[in-house]
Image (cartoon, rainbow, N blue to C red):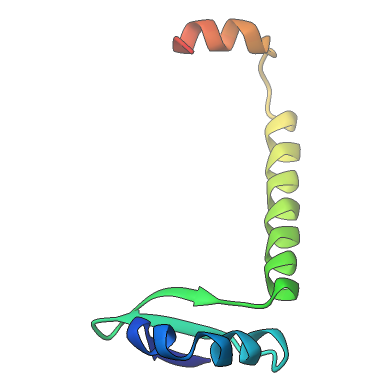
Length: 82
C-alpha cells in the first residue's frame, strides 16, 4: 500500500487517482504521520460492500434463529420513542 500525506494528495490528485483506478494500488492518506483514510478502486469498494452484506445476512439469520417472540416494527418504534 502506498502512503502519502494529505498535502501530497492535494498536489498530485490526478496521479494518485490514476494509480488507484488503473494501477490497482491502494493509497493510505496520512495526517501527522498517521493513516486517516484509504483511497481504493471501485472494484475494491464493491467487494468490501459484498463482504459486509454477507456478514449482515449471516448475522440476521442467527438472530432469527434465537428464541423469543417477534415484535412489530411500529410497536418497537413507539417503545423507543422514534
